[in-house]
Image (cartoon, rainbow, N blue to C red; front, side, top):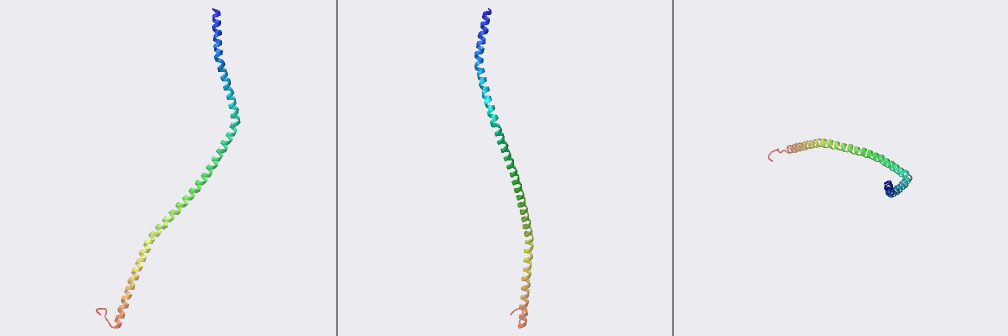
Length: 138
């Protein structure tokens, strides 16, 4: 009975070793690949980090330039808005005063026309009186 137990244990150990050998070999290959990957990362990672830092610096510089451009554009657009506001004020002033000037000019012309008509009428009347005629019915 002891021989049977020893045989069962021996068979179990052989089966266990049979399954463990491929697993151990796979673990060995995986560890080797991991070592190669870590060595590669140790060589490439500093360069990648420098590139990332350079890119970050470039982005920061571009952002600063964009801020400056936006500030200049804001100043320009504010100036354009102020010019537009001034033009609108001048337009309103000319429009309001232009109406007043037109009314004044029209009134002046009407006055000159009335005065001219009156002067012509009197001159005509005086010339007829000097000639001996009357104003009516000639």
